[in-house]
Image (tube, rainbow, N blue to C red):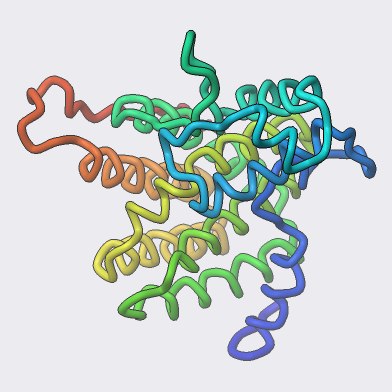
Length: 260
């Protein structure tokens, strides 16, 4: 299937519309419990940036807002903590997770490894429907890369393409792990892809990767899939690391899965 131009954009929008930036979007349960509903609502605010990293989450305030006792709120905070969006500190309570540069690097490293697994499965399966969506997505990334201010749309498109690729693999555990890590890193991905230069660099890798997929270069496709995550993580770490930090703290790690 070969789709381009307006038809490609329409195809992308149909498929990407099923990918939401919120907790439980990939879950099989159609009805959420009260704590899960509260967690999803607070998670939306964290992911959108309405609640800033380090901001306190006050149980009593949430209990009043959602008209529940503090029990469901505590359960919701545990869910958010499990998903990495909230950190519970002794004697301080819950705060929006504020990751250090080293923690961001670690999470991007793991995410890159998982996307390497996804890329291998995608390259072996050669699903024409997914390839059509990827083609449309790559075209969209190329357009967004040329914008002076994309308002985070480029990183959101990358997120959607990654999740759609993971869903196509038929491995629910893999897709769920990637979904969770992608939510945790979305705001850092937006940070790393804020400039036009970085987006254009990323768009070139996406194009090269898609070309490798079409010609059946499995090792090349997997390597480029990991590379784009590694570069995004490295840029986020660079922006988060004070210029005066010791050199050994600004390390660069690469998680490699041998090509087969």
